[in-house]
Structures are given as structure tokens and as C-alpha cells.
Image (cartoon, rainbow over all chains, first blue to last red; front, side, top):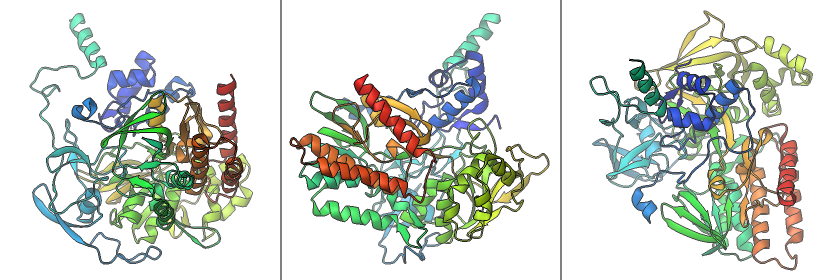
Length: 85
Length: 131
Length: 403
């Protein structure tokens, strides 16, 4: 079960996320930076609740009011030409 | 093409008088109905696999079907990254599945192991330091 | 430049547009999906009074009304960023930048995953994906499948698939992992099932809902839950079986299913392979509030409402001037509640644009009451603590404003 993929876009599995959390005692944001989970094509829309749940379970902390994995624009993939306007 | 269609429905009624449309997927011709999305037209033709993961080559198909997950992205008339679940088919539309990339930045068996993430970098750095 | 831009052409967005157009505001509604209607489009269930709730028809009614009022609705437009400027908002989309004085975000919900080994295979889809394929596109998602995850939404959609003649082997739980801790726990799932017991025509699932009020009774019910599952509309629902993996090379070929204890632990040696060509995964829903987040709207985590919610008051107004929210982004509830919230949000926006002498006050009060009444009478309740969650949100808004 530890080999189950959590982040589909970047193919990051539960084991890698768990190990990273216990090694660095990190937040969902730090997991994203260290493992790329939640950083792929979909922008974390699919795995965000899963990442939050894993961090909550391992750290034993309840979710806070600010969104753990900061949402940043663009929230859909956009070509550089479009951003440049 | 109608093998997978729900033509009769006890509440929604009959699906009738649909206009047919021809399109191609990976060079093969298929028929869908006007108003179909690429995803529904292909599934109606029994096709589930829409792309492979760019790095690992694992097969992927529709997952959320409403534009959230981007798993169904395909190339449409030369434009990559188009969501099959949100894009309606057009007459003679040319659709290509997503292929595996040769990724110069990613480690493969016979290439230099370049770190993919910061933690990989840390591990390599540590290993090198420890000799 | 519009008086109001509405993101999302679902029940909330369309109703809001109608309310705004009735007060003659300039309105633009955008949606990513090629057809307007949002998630109304897939909905199809029988109400306790025997009448069918047909989302496609409900969407048609709203669209017809919007059309009569000359409402501009543009589909296949994705917003990827929003900036607040001194008088309103710039909304960045794949079709250029739109400007509006007021903004209503009615982007609904996204599905929570229940990750399992093999869930990236073609043929594995979210339960909502199957609903759209079945009822909107009228395409069969497969020949024989299984639903993993038993909750209000998945039971309703399983029924819809059955109506369309799709062969569902059964519904079972996902194997436990840190993500599926709730959906893989038979006792927690039982609580959810009891909330929809009244919808089951066969009465099978009502097998004991009357004596299952206390927690102890719930545990007992799970302990003695029939090995063969209980049947709802002839389809077995298992609380003591879990899918541990999905197998296949290029697409789904089978699932591995195991017996589980009342706590969800796998019973060794009970492994079985069931051949299927599709799998629907049902984790649940969470409010999709990305666009509110990029504007900088404050959030509140409220479990009863389904997750992180943009702070808003009873009039659907956020602390960001000119920013409104309605529908599932404010908490996971039925489409009927979303529709009522949309009307309320539309009136609030009209009030901000034109209402100086309180001419909308009565209508707003009425719309508020309407939301409450519909919530109280809802046949499908996604969370039993919805009212508590709503009150918490009210308090938060008040505290932010009055510190």
C-alpha cells in the first residue's frame, strides 16, 4: 500500500511522502517542494486533500484555517504567450 | 460506434437523431456524435487510453471528466495540452494521444543521475560528501 | 466592463445571473464546460414523494429564464487568475481579460481522491466522471464495474448508472491508508448510509436505521453487517469488504477485494479477484475555491461544510469588496440549496450596484429564508452538521468585520 501513487501528475507515492514528512517534520508546502507532490500539471487540485490528510495523520495536527498548500495563479496551465497578453 | 451508447433510458428517454461526425485519433478514423466531447466520443468507440505519462510512460485516461485533473489532455489539430473532457469534437478534427517524452533532465539507466527534487539533490550531495 | 461577472454556469451561477438581470445589471457568465448547467446536468434521482429530480430539465428551466432576460453566457472559458483593482476585478481567461465591478465565484466542488494502487489506469475514474458520461454524454463507462467508496453521492450515482443499464458488480470500501482513513472505516461509512436510508425504496438498507441511533448500536450493526452486503436496488453494498488494488496493464482488468474487520483492517487470506473493466472512485467532495484564494479572500476550515471555505456572510458577501460566493464553494450541499444561494447572491449584488433606498431589502430577506427552508427540507444531506458549520461561518465573518 505504501507504493500507492498520491500525486498522479508527478507520480509521487505514499512512501516517499511519509518518509519526507518523518525526516523533515514538514508541512504540505514543504512536501511539495521536496517531492513535487501537488506541483504537477493539475496544480494540485486532485491530490491536495490527500496531501493534507497524510500530513494531518502523521503530524497529528488538525487543519488550520489558512490553506496549507498555497494556491497560486495561474490556476490552469497557460502558455507564456497568453500570460504576456 | 453505438455499442457503448445509452440509447434508451427509462427517465431521460431515447437518444435519437444524433448527427454523426468523423474525426481521427492517432491516425485512425472514428465516428462520434455532434455535441460529444473528445472523451465521450472516444469512450463510445471503446477507447480508454488517451495518453501516457510523459516521463514514465504509464497509461492514462479520463479521471474527473470535468476539467479538474488534466489527465485526459491530448493534442488537437497540433495544439497540445487540450482537455479531452472539455473539448467538443469537430468534423475532421485531428487528435493525437499524449506520448512519452525523451527527458534530458530526468535520470535514466545510462544517463547521469540528475536530481529531480531538492530532497534528491540533498541525498546525492550527502552520498558524495560521505564518499 | 460588466456590473458583474459570474464564474460558473451551474445552479448557483445561473440563478444569480437571473436575479441580476431582473434588476437590469450587465452580466457575463463564464464556464469551462462546453454546455451550461454545471453539475445539475448529471443529476437524476427519485425523491421520497416518487417524483424524479432531473437535473437536465432543471438546467433547461434556468437557461430558458436566463435567455428571456438576454443574459450573456459564454462556455469553454477557463479563468486562470483574478486581480482586484480599485473599482473591481480583472478576470484573466483563455479568451482574454474581462473586467467587472462585482464578481461572483460559483465554481462548485472538486472530488476528493481515495488513492489505491492502480488508480491511474485508464478505466478508473471519479464517481462524478461516471455521472457525466452516463447522463450527459449518454456513453456507457464500461461493461462491468465496481464503485469504491460508499457515501451519499456514490450511492446516488450508482443508482443512476444502474438506471442506464450499466452492470455494477457491487459497491465496497477503499482499503485503509492515511488518505482513506474515513472512507475505509465501516463505522463512519455506516453513519453516512443511515442519512440516506430514507431514499432506499427496497427498505433493505433501512434494515435497522430505527435502532441505530446510538454509537454502540452503530458498531453492532457494522459488526453484524451481512457478509454478502445489503442490497439497495438489487446491488450489493459492502461495508465489510475493501478493494486493495486495481489491476491491469493498459487499462483496468480486475480489482483485488478483501474482507475487512469492523475497523477496516484487512482479514488475511480473504483476497479475491473480481474481473471488471471500470472502477469508480468515490472519496467525496470539497469546495473548489482556488479563484477566491488567488484574490486574497480569507478562508475558514469548517469540516461540516467540506473543507476550506472563503469567508462569507448570510448574504453571500465576502470581506473582499465586491466579491461574492454561492453554491458548493460555500459548503457541500444539494443543487437545490446552490440554486437558492445563487438567487440570494444575485440580489445582494444588485443591491450593491443599485440599491440605495433599501428597495431590495424585502427580496433579500425572503431569499435568505428560502435558502434556510430548502436546507432544512433537503432530502440529501451531505453532512449532518451543516447548520453548525453555517453558524460558525457567520460568526467568523462578523469577527473579521468587527474584529
